[in-house]
Length: 350
Image (cartoon, rainbow, N blue to C red):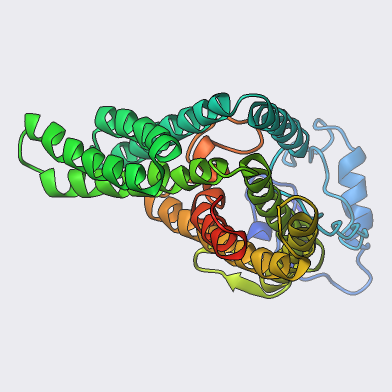
């Protein structure tokens, strides 16, 4: 059988390991052509058009590779993506906003119930993820009962009622965990007390805002500024973000996004304080918006730290396009006491 040189098997460099000689093929690599010999490409074409019977010792190549110098189109640059289903996120956000605003301005007691439900669901998500990922069994029953009671006590009895309910909830967590073996007691009750402070106690400040004469508008201002801050951070960061804010905690956040959050929140704060809050002025709104942007960003980063420690992306899947309830409360919870305090300092608690 005549021995002829091989051609690149994959249209690439002949030194590539994929182009090594194969005994089952029609060509071998180690032949040196004599002067005047036919062109290898023409000889290869001759082999391709001959039948197996004409060349009994040569296999017929199947699915020949394209020519090595065939141009390949350059890959299209990746498009920026929000990473979530924006349609579902917007729909769920609008629906939740409608429920909240309707309950806020129709019957205040209904809005307190909405807060309590959000607190209980948030506690369930948090304790479930702690147990799944870390084996920490923070007792849910005393947390849920105490958390709902904390919100109601804050609305009915003010700050004193909120603190008393917080203390009783922590005590209930300590006692409830005693019904199980002592192994892991310290980490379980520590996580339980943390959950009681992080979710229901901070949410109680929303109920405290509602007790004022213009309470509904104070709560609306709090919600609007937090949402506007998050929206500004997302919009500006997605379009102009280049410099990472905290890459080890939340790689998607940028310094440009933070500036967007501050700008949007300050403008919204000036408008809300001027037109929604009794005796409020625009310059107070600028300070309020700045504080909201800072607290909302820190709250978002704080929950990102928790989720990174747990090795999860979202706390839950209850809200399509958003994740879980806790993924929506992350910036609201730490912002609530900040807004409550500044409003008390600016215009009083009445």
